[in-house]
Length: 65
Image 1 (spheres, one colour):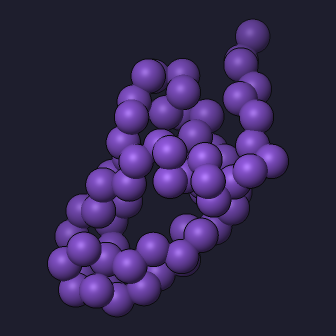
Image 2 (cartoon, helix red, strand yellow):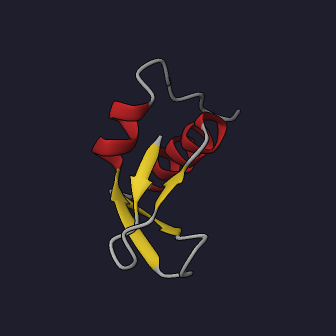
């Protein structure tokens, strides 16, 4: 997933594995947004769950037992 920093406007990649792990964590905790830090300027970028789901169409929540 490509994302452009809201502050410095530099693009950076969020890898598929990280997107899937983040979606699992967000679903488990009931979060609607997740904060990623820009690797360039270190500012926080809030990304909505809807955008992450759009970037990972094959993701399915796997509940831990």
